[in-house]
Length: 552
Image (cartoon, rainbow, N blue to C red; front, top):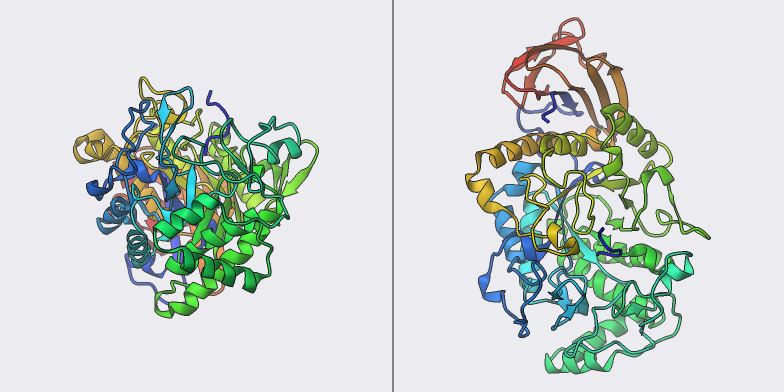
């Protein structure tokens, strides 16, 4: 959700070995590697801009007005995501979690934001939290997507908005005054003027701090009755409030509606939008109900449970930086969101850290994540849907982007098209629209340069997926020149050891592996297919590539 106006080849050697309590079968490691949230590779896509799997749902609610460039619906949908899961696109990238923009019913009309007429293609302009927008698909489509993803070992993260409704239009009523405020606009100078205010004009702000019980909005009652589900929805609400003993406040209605998607479909996580603009208490209650809903789904679907991982929550607290540790500073107040409902925070600092050298990045992140943030994590990114100053706007540093993002401690967010150098500079667009073009599938199909870039992302991505030590391990530099380091990770009976070397020559290269691998160990380079034996604490690889991925 946009809040504010928008204003290599690298030589790499990666040496890895993974061992568990049981003997591993060669090339079968991915199937036996446990899923670890703190090491996840998250693919973030805009539902409407990724892949059009059902052209029959492209037009709904008479959304026919001419929109500004890249500010209208373009046809991407839930079925389109499912198609790419079926094709193995995410498997080849090493992706084990997919986050996509909100799919709930959006306002039916649009607004002119001064940047051209805009519809709610991005999903952040909610009209009805209990329904899916037909442009994105149906609840049957969602159920099928989750099932397909889980069959591939991929977790699904939905995007949840509790802070605001969609704008008011001639077709879309403002919610009642006891639900929302329409002024003042936020000035972001204090906690109060960041939370009890509207982000922008005509974006009604949910009164998330309110303890006042409220009735359902009349327009929503009328809508549900017309759709023949009023009694069912009311009965479900009654059961929720009876079970929780929560008051019928605005935030609690929305918490109920969002967590229903967990209990009904078994989604694995939520990315929460505009978190710092809501009352802090929202998110502890939200996490409690997420966990209850997840336990309910597991109880009702015992044969579909993937593992014992808990429900996962990621906070978008705009401008949170990993250097701040657990706290976000509003100026007059500091808030610890990790202690208020979240496992993870989106890290807005990574793109600036990525300008620095490898050891700076890796040691900094491993130190913080294994220190103050141990047990939690951050989500690192280098481009996004609403960050107007990405690390590589011109897409001239694609391999560097992949190497730094995918080898850094923490969760990695691959924004759709990062892997294929999808253009982030589109002429005649305004603001963040330039970041939101349709996925460049044709380039992937026919452009050799795109295919070469994608192959690099795929190899590093699969390596990262197979080795949790990369995202969640302890980091230690072995040698500075050539730059070689180790990562180690242990969880229960599982252990994973990794040695990585960067900035090495093409052709024959010799690296120290420290004490990670025993002499005589045969290692296989997953990048070139060659093998090497550890001798006197070193390995020698002769390949035409500047990347080496060795596995035991």
